[in-house]
Image 1 (tube, rainbow, N blue to C red):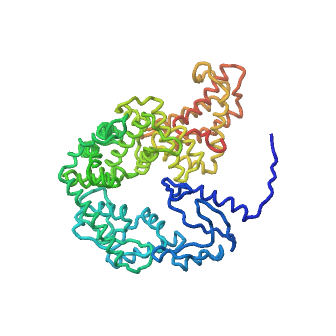
Image 2: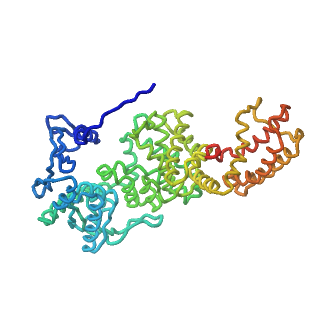
Image 3: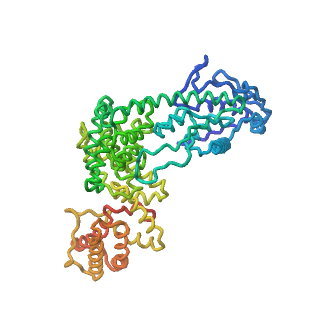
Length: 587
């Protein structure tokens, strides 16, 4: 059935009168409030609308507020009325009121002012992109304010000071020099922070000293609290906090954080072995790091500022006499890509335990909902393995983790977990710029080793870009396509060279035997790579072409036909576990 609907056009102002209230209504927030009798919920009370088409006001009402051509200026100036004569004058009029409408312009102004202020203080600002965007989005007229704090607070871990300034106060810290851990070491370095900060005020520099004093007072109180927490925390060694993890619930079906810590201790040993950890110098730091990894969750500092989990654990580990390798692994366990080998093993054990346990408990993400951050956990499994080029069998790791869980993780659930991780791997590969069909071809055959998958995708991408690729793919595809409509009576077809009728059959058979022997006798003893597989196919192309030109595969004699199908099946099976070329364009 079909219908033709004709709707007569309406004047633009009339359309906008209906559309604008719906537009405002469509803007949703995670947290909203109600403030008047209209009962409308929004992130903040709506005080005015400016709705103009040229110089014409578009009249509409929503949430008890009627539109007009009057905006308002900054609060420090008493929020004065600003009349907008026409839509094309809006940006000019607002700029004359001192407000920077363009986000990128505000951001650039903030960066410039912060850097200038830091230079005046004899240092350089730590400008983190997330904080910069946050400050940019709640400031209309940015003005930098320099402030300071008591130098005694510099005895606190730098990460504590920085986190307090950034998270609680939205200040930009200042340091005397860049302080990054460029090697895989971790120690109690002297703080490179200066006893200063830079805040951004929404307004001009009138009464700037009062603003500075207020900010310094609030920050001083925050630092005093942090100082108390750290001072109390370090009265115990980090390992003495571990038993207290029993008071934190990981999940009702999966036990406490202590239970989780015990599980990842067992899994960590398995993961270490799978990653090739050998000798006391590698195995001991891993065991110790996994054992202490979650202990800082019950410290006062992390309870107050959860963003410091792991970071504080690393600091407290050093203060407890643990080695630098152990402290570094603890401190970087929540990073998407830990830089140390021990840190990678710890992070993998933790994230795989969460994925296996929560999937086993029936808590897989649904739609946009992912309350346990399992998509992030899966990315955190894939990315470190790729970036460090570490071969790792995810299927085996999931199987080993399932054995440590307090509930049954079925084979179906384990399959679901691996498919979920493969889905994240697909996203990562897409973000790396690889073609969709190449990704699909490799993932269809191998996805349980992310680093190996990336190598395979890179190699296949190179082959697909070759000038002779279409002839290579077509030769292999001819062998695969003819098998699709055929079914063997008793398992795979066998090949009996005594049943060959034509010379081309024997030639193809000999070519297959020779090529397969070369591929199977690789010096590394590993399964054939995409390169090795396609080199074999390339060598077979002349024999495949001659075979199809001279030989009738679907012979009337059943035995001869099946013998020939067996030859083609040998060629088709060469791609098993490597790539499904039927997913490629042009197959």
